[in-house]
Length: 379
Ligand SMILES: Cc1cc2nc3c(=O)[nH]c(=O)nc-3n(C[C@H](O)[C@H](O)[C@H](O)COP(=O)(O)OP(=O)(O)OC[C@H]3O[C@@H](n4cnc5c(N)ncnc54)[C@H](O)[C@@H]3O)c2cc1C
Image 1 (tube, rainbow, N blue to C red):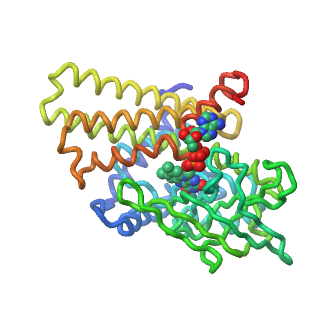
Image 2: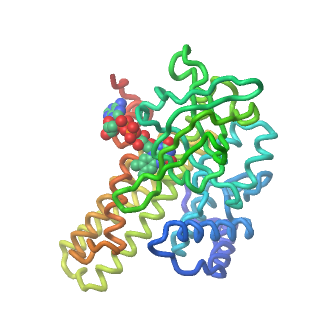
Image 3: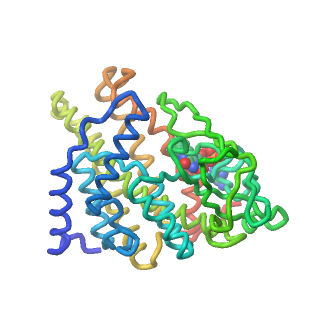
């Protein structure tokens, strides 16, 4: 990939910069999760009004049909501006692209536009208490009922479920089929009696994710995505987009954090210590390698039409580097970085989940070994 900007890429970047400069998101609300989420939602609405919510989506679905390079510029400019994370991140990066790949014309018409405007938030109902890495062993059942489906089971770790209108829900429709074949993918309406959302308290004190108790929830045939028994293939589209898209987004966040740490360390006069400079330099190097690897992932998407298994490598490198960075912050800034309300204390604790969310590091290493390096399958 040629990383020099063309004239049109420079124009794209300048237009976006001008938009970001003209938008004031206000100060980030602290200590109130709902207010914080509303702040992110407002930002996404503003992005949508300006035509910036999903630059990577095709124009016909409300995107800008941005090239791979322009998408990369988009994420980097958000980071440069210190902009909020759009509220409907799972809708924009996961649900939208999955619906575009597998949806009928009616489903695209119905679901895509409200994702862009953050009018309808999405969550991802894949993991269950006994099905995380081994997702295909999930037990949530969908049973035929007249012209629709009755769904029962339990999901866990469902991020953002408390704000969601829709859920990308993977359920078993044929218990007699081999485990990967008996699954179907539903677009489940969260606003119904059969769906209960219970928040889970995290190490950070937040309740970012939830348990989902589903008891006789209904879905119509129009909410089945990709056809009956095809759930595993559809879910793989979601997972590939998660690792490639989200990882790109997150490496940009990593860069923001690293810049903030470097500034604090410099302000404290610690950069004259060559040991400190060396340790910061190492994280800087890793962040840069990660950025270039993310670009390589985007090139694969451009070539093959969808993200490849390389996204697993980016996700794994990102989680490792983010944990290294937040540990370094606590070591360099000392006890001030460990106070309850301190940004670095939050980042340090939140980073623990990085090597679990979106696929654990062990599982990602298996994928890289088998599908990128072509090593024999693990047993
Ligand atoms: C912050 C956060 C947000 C999340 N958000 C969502 C969400 O919105 N929606 C959703 O569906 N899920 C979500 N998850 C769940 C996440 O996808 C799972 O936690 C993850 O897939 C691991 O599953 P598990 O927790 O059941 O662990 P397990 O699969 O039980 O793994 C336990 C341990 O065994 C190891 N292991 C398992 N299999 C293998 C293997 N084959 N080889 C080597 N080691 C192995 C794992 O690496 C891990 O260390 C979230 C998780 C976190 C931390």
